[in-house]
Amino acid sequence: MNLSLYKCFRLCINFAIVFAEIQFLMGQNLVKNPSFEHYKNCPKQLGNLKHDLIDWDTPTLGSTDYFHGCSQAMGTPKNFNGEQPADFGEGYVGLYLYAPDDYREYLQAHLTETLREGDKYVLSFYVSLAERSDFAIKEFGVCFSENPIEVETRKVLSRRYLSKVSGDVSNYFEIKYSEYYSDNETWVKVEKEFVANGKENFLIIGNFKDNKKTQNFKTKRKAKQGSYYYLDMVSVIPLKNHEGQPNPNDKVLDENYTLNETITFKSVLFNFDEFTLSTQSIQELDEMVIYLTSRPELIISISGHTDNIGNKTYNLDLSRKRAKAVAVYLMQRGIDKKRISYQGFGSSKPLEANNTIAGRNKNRRVEFTLTKKF
Image (tube, rainbow, N blue to C red):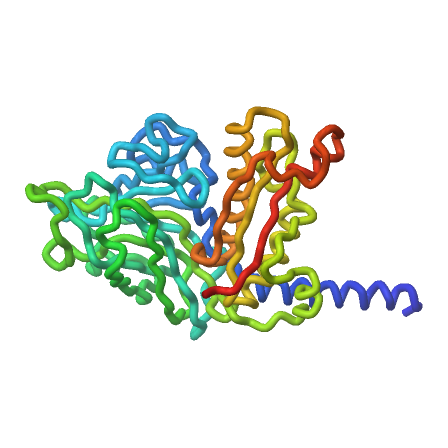
């Protein structure tokens, strides 16, 4: 092997090692389309989730709903069951977890990889009780399956049904959480650690108990209908990748990130009147994910900015969307929502003069500040 070929070979090996370290540290979410932003069709009617939404379907005949800001009939924040702003983009889902005659609705996702036997994972999602619900329930059911589940029933997906499906469905548990069941204004995070048995390929979320066994309480005096929840930002993350892992590049990263100092992302820039993240932006944000994963004691404040073209009100909204795009991406990569805040400043804080194209380009930016949790 000649010298130049050897150097090339060593360079490739080193790159592969660094890439593997990055993948390990990033705490990759194994759920595709976790905040329900990507769709095949903008939703126009109830119960059409499996035909409209990408990477999600329903394991039964229950008509789970998909809402997105692109729609008038099935939009956000206002819809047929109340009003709930989307915190992680413009989309979320809605489903009945308790209803007359044991009617149920569920969600099913195909994970990006089979879970590893004996490894620990963290499952989390955000919920909010719909305003027009008559009941609230006190627990969510979660089932992992080896094969996709497809059962022709509109009633509860009970253990009797699950015992007849092909493949392993033994990893089943419930999440009891006293804070979430009656909150119909804010999104509340539901979270649980679990150990994998090595056959989990699919995730199903819902209520696997019939009405008699479901813990619930009335939210209205004359309650006759059901318990309807909005659900958003689902994640399954390997626990060893979740938080607190040492970063082999800490010294380099610490030179780039200073506590309590406002820093401008170098590559998170936007075209005129846009708030979509570019490929270059994502590469830099992935570095931030690595750092925040290795520093669980830190929180990040994100601020969006615009140039001075357009009116102040419009620019203020646009700047907030740019900051939110960054925040949502960090959440999708596994950073806890509680560690992230964002706001927009419009054109009020320019870095450069707005009288040149180059200056306006630099002003269409996002900045961040890292601080320690109190």
